[in-house]
Length: 271
Image 1: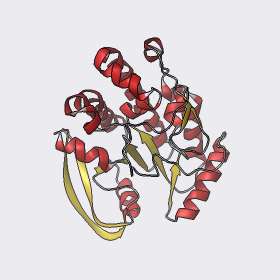
Image 2: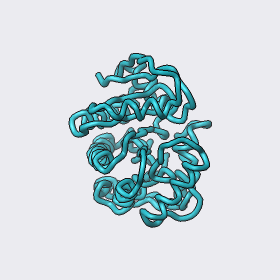
Image 3: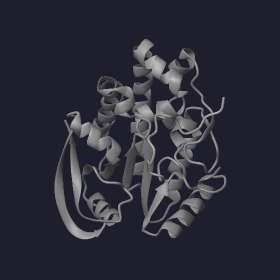
């Protein structure tokens, strides 16, 4: 089965999360680290973004991805209810372990780019089939989302413990204009907020930056509240790194993680 960027995905979404920009294969932590360092040097800045591309979670659940091509898949791994019921725990799989090993090897500041529960499921399931399951098999979908949420929580916890300073959390396949507000709340917001609550309880420190395409919707739907915190003018990534040095867990959003400069950041609280 041939796959590509899902029709769930809006046009113009952040290239760092969807299109990817990692040339060549990254089959080992060493290769991933070299590629990520090259990308950082070309882009500028001080943060190493891992993994290269944006497919580790989907590959951990069995999807086959085009190396170096971001969210482009040559095969979906979830094509039946039996496969949906038996999705593996992603935090135990080799693609995720490879990212954790790479974080441990990295010198300097690291940002983990990760997808939220709904988008991970959408990445391994053909879009028409997933939309059909949302209507006909909601219990099965929720059970799968619960397992994915728990796996993501363990993955992020291991990444931060291994040295990641910032977690960049995005939900590129979840669009309220496609799903409708009711299904968005039921299948997207419920598991995103559950993941955030898990991180509050499991992380000792760190910054979790939520893509504005998600955080603004979540606030509009009453799942989050935000407040602005004034910062010394400078690079946005430096402001996030400064925040990460505090021994607390911070949720930040409403602004693109790749923003050049800003005089403030938007702090988020889960309701």
